[in-house]
Length: 323
Ligand SMILES: NC(=O)c1ccc[n+]([C@@H]2O[C@H](COP(=O)([O-])OP(=O)(O)OC[C@H]3O[C@@H](n4cnc5c(N)ncnc54)[C@H](O)[C@@H]3O)[C@@H](O)[C@H]2O)c1
Image (cartoon, rainbow, N blue to C red; front, side, top):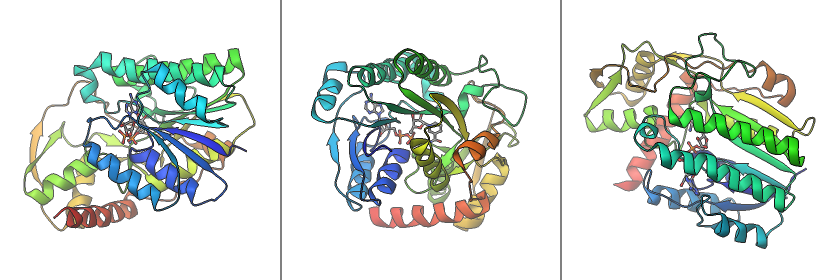
């Protein structure tokens, strides 16, 4: 079992929850690498690091994964049993205007980490992939062995490339690689650019929310605690050298229903500004989670009707703290 773990992107939304969860079990030693870039406010990321510190001590390196030499110095200091690689340029729409930045971070950055895993003999690599790799897959729910040659954004293509690099390194250098395809994750500390958080902010400010398409696009929204239980199960998994797992709730919610739920829980009406579908956006994401259930004993618990009130409670408290 891995004890000494490197979490890249640990100051971000998912990474900070993972670090907290591991630190609650005393036998983990955590190192975080994050460049605290301004994709969203670095202040939020610093506050996330402060939150983690409440659960225990960890090493932190403000390092860019694109910079091989700086990253190497992290490996010179500590011997890792496992890397959970979550650092990435996330988000579909900005990847259309900054494809090179996405490729450098998500492909070269991933390659740098795999190279270091090879050089420093790190036996296990868990990669944060995305449901976006399914692109415009018409067959639902999406299963891990569906073809992923239909990506429709640079972001999705970089995640698919990351999975291929993982497979290559697992085959050539016997690094166990587990790729986790996350389906829209939400909960406390959710990235401010993601729909649920962005909508909640705009609704409470009385500003219009842009609704792309006719409101019938559907997403498989996954509550953060369920994702963390899946990531932890992947860290514990040792039965094969390479696997891909979907981590979703395996339930879909229409965009218009999501807005309704936010309105109910915020007790405010949304001002909706209807816009055409955006390039790069897929009409549906829907996870087949039977493989994760079977091999990881993954068992997500949080229906969107239960998760949104928890998100809103966190959101209200976070807003109150900043006033
Ligand atoms: N949140 C979701 O719904 C979702 C869905 C699918 C996949 N993912 C993937 O999960 C991972 C975590 O996502 P998140 O929502 O927590 O995003 P996030 O942006 O909150 O976290 C990513 C972290 O990586 C760091 N980072 C980015 N580029 C870096 C670089 N060059 N060097 C070092 N650190 C860098 C950022 O500063 C950030 O703190 C990402 O790989 C993302 O693509 C997330």
